[in-house]
Length: 296
Image (cartoon, rainbow, N blue to C red; front, side, top):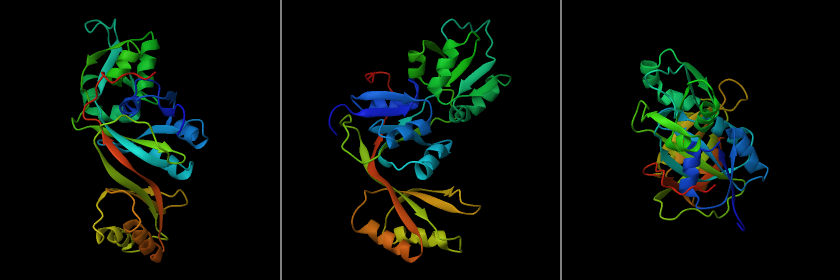
């Protein structure tokens, strides 16, 4: 890849996706997108070289919009992933008076609201919940509103939109992480920050010819007897009729020319198909830090 790499992400600024971007990339031309499909479309159409979108949350599970859009609407490859610890805070305007002002409206992404459900139910049972395209967008709305609303988001959103953190760490579970997928139209060399811990993973899509007894067992056996560790398996609808599913499988090793072709041949003999979605390094951000240098 020559010149400055063009990187797109689920925005606006102040999202956890932007935190993943700042952790991964030391430089480039950055563009935020209002939603996940817009970011993935930009990769597909060559508007940007790299897209970064949320893939899975430890509490709420997979981001189905990302998975389904990648499978059914665009042809992109996963070339890396970044796991980011999620710290959700309650954000309000800086002139918010805790003794006088009442929070009647709370804004955030549906996953963020779900991650803080018990806290919000206990402390703000009468507040109206407004779902937004991202936590950054929620902070932006609160900052621009004349009402005394609140947003659920991270410290970057508070800094970006001039808000203050009213309450820290309002998420219901401490071990909250989100995996972000880094995708490209064609896998190319990326300029990323150095010295990040990593392991190698491969993601494949397996489609069954039909639903029959023992079908999934046979698929898993093709990996098991080769001692290939599967860290995730998930079924998603093919959107071709009730009962038609594909399986998304994460394998904890890089793609090779021995084991994976053997799996594919065995599955083809069973009438199944296997599609490689990406073989890539998996990075872990140990702590979210505001000290990461801003790149825009």
